[in-house]
Length: 113
View 1 (cartoon, one colour):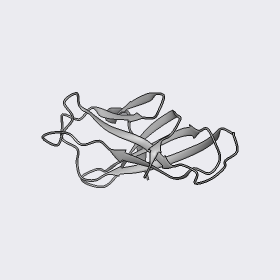
View 2 (view 1 turned 30 degrees about the vertical axis):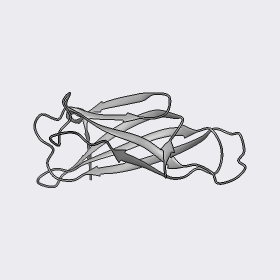
View 3 (view 1 turned 90 degrees about the vertical axis):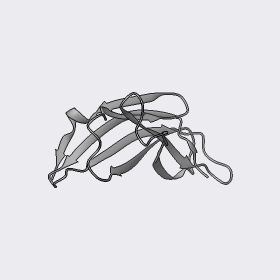
View 4 (view 1 turned 120 degrees about the vertical axis):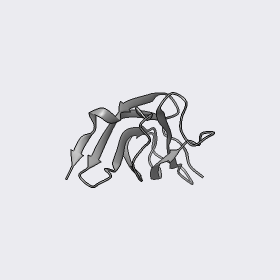
């Protein structure tokens, strides 16, 4: 089971040229030891299907090391594709780690070829 990574350092949102457009969320962060694997963004669930404040929430998690690990800060990246056309009430995404969270708006999404 995944555990939150130590810190998120950036979030980028991309949109495809398809109709309807799809949004791709890319988050970068740091883990505090070697041996972490399978970094991923796990969506948070909401009553009624949409978040009340307009920001889809994600937890940035990875599988921690099984045994001894080196005490070293290492970068990790995770990508998540939002399938379908998000409802018009969605403003952006919010990604949570163990020690911080960052937000990105959909209106500033960059086009992904």
